[in-house]
Image 1 (cartoon, rainbow, N blue to C red):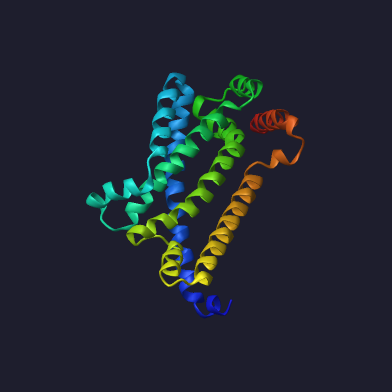
Image 2: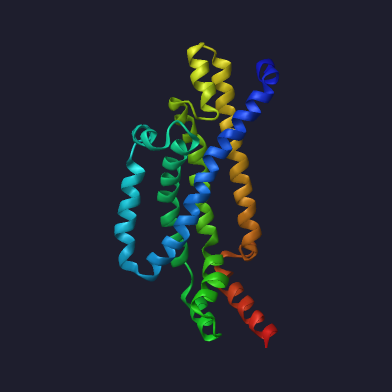
Length: 228
């Protein structure tokens, strides 16, 4: 404990670096997976080959990707973040597709009957309903990415992974345990923020789950009545 307190500034820096290296790729994966998922739901025949491709990419070892990327991106943050972005995409893409496919057909038909165009229906009905499933995938991707960042320390860029390498080299268990604890804390904080975001973005889920479609349909009708 005394070692952690005396090195608080270094630990704070490593924790911030770990969060940056882990979460930026997740956000990039989300930005790519949402439009890709929309396209695959619209044209269903695209989903199996794209899913197979992302699954193959997910199976690639991070260390092998580092070796390949170093020749192009050097020993930089980008070399670590690209594999993490690929892994995040592999997790988030099926979550987006499953979320969009979970939209109740009566709700979709009600939106069409109210005159909602394709993009308006997507933005105001389908994506909001898909949000819980997407955030569930986002939670997995974020926590996994926070843990995987430490592998980047093998090329000198790994956030809290520095504590594992340095602790092992010096046979200093306290440093290793501190790194593990900080990764767990960072994961829990990130997961809590995502759960809070889900609750804020999906207020209808605070009621009974079977009433979800009814609540959204009522909201759509209310919005249509207000605009009349």
